[in-house]
Each structure stands twice: as structure tokens, then as C-alpha cells.
Image 1 (cartoon, helix red, strand yellow):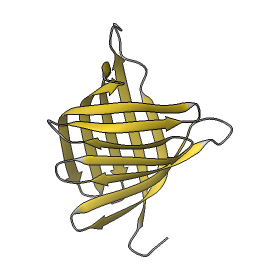
Image 2 (cartoon, rainbow, N blue to C red):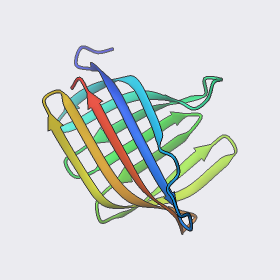
Image 3 (spheres, rainbow, N blue to C red):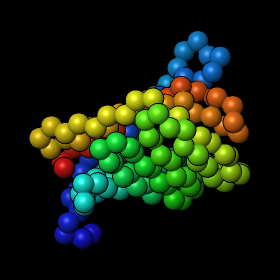
Length: 145
């Protein structure tokens, strides 16, 4: 690990409310250690996401700008997603059984920093193969920045 990276605690909470469902799905919460670095006004957060007891995982990179969030995953799940308010951003989600074309229409995005905590929130619609599948939120809390 380079000297300009800090060790941090990461908590990512994702909530999806599927189209046609009365209630949202249970939240998906990832709590883990990671690294943090700031360069040229961009915050870089790296962490690993484990999906099952067999250790299937992906390395994740979040790039937090003042006006957008970029998420990249490499491993069992591969994706690049952008959350840009007012835009419909194309993405793909590559899983072991195939690739799904997605788009992300972000409605709300905010970043706040208090002392050693960075908080990011985005609310968005998720489209799969051109059809809306869910309304979603992602909340990211980074402690130790």
C-alpha cells in the first residue's frame, strides 16, 4: 500500500424497490476495511466485496467527485456504473452466467464530509435491457478519511 493511501472502514448500503412490488427488498449491506486517497479533488475508495461463504468476491473502486459517483468492480462481478444527477448512464453487469445491459438514471446525489467521515448518497432508477426494474438508493459511509 502506497503512503498516500489511508486505511478506512467502509459501509455500503444498497436498497432496491422492484417495479410491481409493494415493499423494497431487504437492504444489502457491505461492511469492510478498505483504502482511501484523495487526488485532484477526487476521492478514491478501494475495498473488496465478498458474495458467499466460498470467497467469491470482487475488488471495488469508488471515485467520488463533487457532482457524481463512479463504481467499478472486477472479479466474480464486473461492472462500471456512473451516478450523475439528471443523466441516464449506460452500464453493463457481467456475472458468471452472462452479461446484462443496464442504465442508471440518477435523480439525487450528494456528498458530505464531517471530520473524518465521508458520506455519499445517490437515488436512481435502474433499467435492464431498456425496461425499468427498480428504484434504488446507495448510501456509502467512509470512516477514517
